[in-house]
Length: 346
Figure: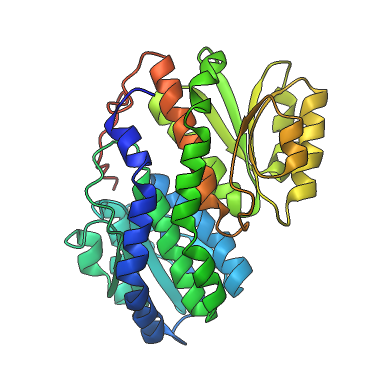
């Protein structure tokens, strides 16, 4: 792969998560002790990649902690000026830069309503950090590439640590500590393989499918492909895909399937069988042998990755795919057309 800032930061993700775990575990434990018993559900305000991290949180806190997670509609706070009642909520703002006024407005209102507030951000001096009672710094170092990579996976890790302490589950926390090695192993296993994606350089559309924990991964990989290459890429859950969008599939249509050993195995296998019957070109991001055996392009992974931590690893081949596809199309992965690093929405 050609050298780029983006490529460098993709390869920094394991170290970034190691930094987070080393520097923030005790701090996050203290945060949980302070908010314990003060909320019944969680509301998360975020945009872009951070919003995809929030999708992961919906399944993470739902499955591990049995806590409902709602995604905020920031426009209700910033434009319509009709904020909902947040009574009983832990309100979390996730933002790499912490700069977006609409996200900050959600946390401002939450403070007014006496809710527990938490910022997950890479900038502890940002407006989001300043307005929040508690802050989890991501410790990724300055993320220079426009497309978020290490700030995204570190946000997932921060949410995972938070979930572990809410669950009082040391076993899960120990499992989470394996993620940096799993990321590095995944990078090593796919670095040479990724240069063989030339066959996709002329594709005009792509669908990315994930469900459960990796519903978030489908959205994040789709976003990376869109923002770097301009290719129209649409994410779906496998369940939603059956409800109409599958009609768009025809011979040679590229479909990326994301699934790891767990509750969604049979769902994904059934979908793949249907896609094969329609002639789809299947790219698999999976450690399910049956899925990989019937795919046209396969990414490889270490043998055992628990489903709940898999989004932190599964997104990495998708980042590599988006980066290499950008190179294949003669574009600059460090200068996506029409984008800037900090996006402020109101």
